[in-house]
Image (cartoon, rainbow, N blue to C red; front, side, top):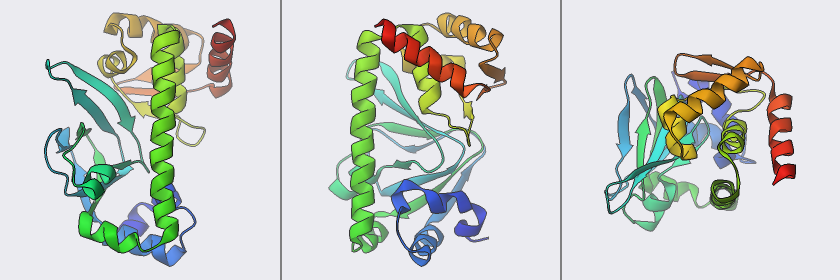
Length: 226
């Protein structure tokens, strides 16, 4: 089955915004589909990047290892997110590790194919928009890590990675703790509080936001208290 038919939601991906339907379909169907039944590293920090990946389903964990060997989970990419584009176009080595989680599918677009689409000003604009969103995300993350409590950081993170149309996030307590910067026990306690208040539901490796309004109100009240 063609990628555009198997993953129709990708027609709405920010990378393809405002392109014609034919251009969207052409891009998706030209990509190589890669499926992963178990966690698999698709990009390795410090290694060459052969092209970009568009997350089709599941999640990809982005992590960074510093010179002392400390590993930090910096982001969890979800369907529609793009990975490896900056390194592929700049011919720099990968700035982070990208690990596809179990039951994840991605579309791979080799660097030469990316250049064919760069002939479209709209495609170039969309890539720039993705870079801008990353800058804003990094700015927010820096502010949150510096000025907000663990409870506030957790709520903001859950809000950022879910939506009304995609209320679930596949994440372990350990990965959440790594991103938020606290112990697994603390995350477990905070998640339990949100569950008891019926804000979220916790399953095996899965968190579902049940009451987005309540989650957003917790964030707004936390911001007002800062």
